[in-house]
Length: 284
Image (cartoon, rainbow, N blue to C red; front, top):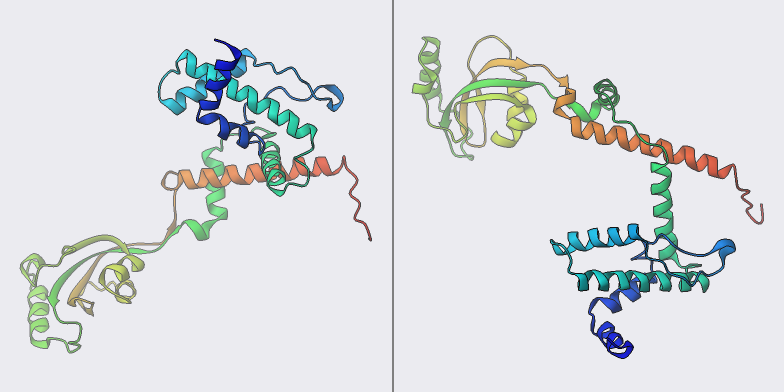
């Protein structure tokens, strides 16, 4: 293939213009291993090492979902080389100076380097439990109740209780009647397990859950009004509020522990860097 025909193929490649433009903003520099020579002089020899070629091939395989063809791999390697030489020219022209986008990107990368400078050990269950306890406000489980209710439908605008029917149901329950044979069918069922006040408020209407949690454990059936009508409610079991266990919130706790460890590593590394610099604020 002649230089001219090869150049024409390059111009027809749809990815080439984007690669060249993106290079100026360091968009394609993740694989760049080679750069300026010693003393900051521009190194005009771009070497695509075997390791870099391997990484380019892996990138192409992920992008394409298959092994790249020799032609596709060759094009990707040439795109990388173009990005690298443009990167070096941009650095030589100091195009990175005074550019807030470049500055922000470099700051982000450096912060990542500082966070990863020291390997963060996988937290033990004991450490996770300590972290959960230190953030109890995020992991406390509210008190819950299991209940059975007998339902009588009533329009929301009807505030007066159907006294005769409720009294009849209460009498039947007091005499040992099976609750499942009384009242009307309810969409959520007659027996509800381990519900918090928030759960019940959401399902039955504002304040219903608070009223249920406030009921006395006297074994009686209590009248309560919901959005849907009237209920005779019996508290079957109570579950006191508690702190969530490690297995229940493992992923959230692990992420919290690791995030704090990375932040500590970043702060410590930044302190070490500050010790190597003199910061002068003009006018002070």
